[in-house]
Image 1 (tube, helix red, strand yellow):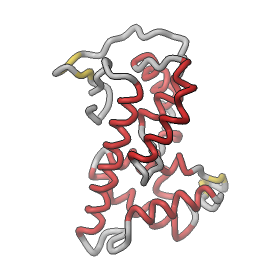
Image 2 (tube, rainbow, N blue to C red):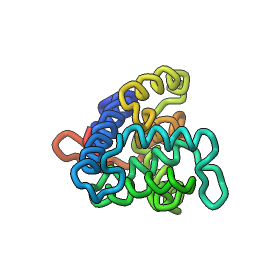
Image 3 (cartoon, rainbow, N blue to C red):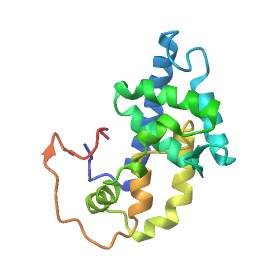
Length: 188
């Protein structure tokens, strides 16, 4: 659900906080049972280490260096449903051990053939004026502070940064439910 009356910054910040909360739930899940990947390890530190390995070019997907943002996207995707917690935790552990994206590849939206279609639709739903691009550096710093584990990554940051100045105006209005419009698995 998305409250379209909110400015894009509020949507980005709210989603970043939801992502950070999800990271906390996944960390607790890993700690709850000894048989789970990353049990007994600092989950957030493992994620930070994996992102640093990606920054250094040491995490690959079929020989291609993987960007830290792709890993953050995969982890974020896994936070949407607790049935993905196992594959995310195992994927992080294996990527740190092998230097390969491996299991996390299945969760990246970049691998989803529908992503360009999703982008075209979402950019018509969430207007971000072109002038907003000048506000991105300050907003990026703010969301990194709000959600440090994934460096401020959120689906709405991807939307805002990818949709600034989208040339086609919105023509579709999602159904309204309780003051919010259905759009995402998160509710702002």
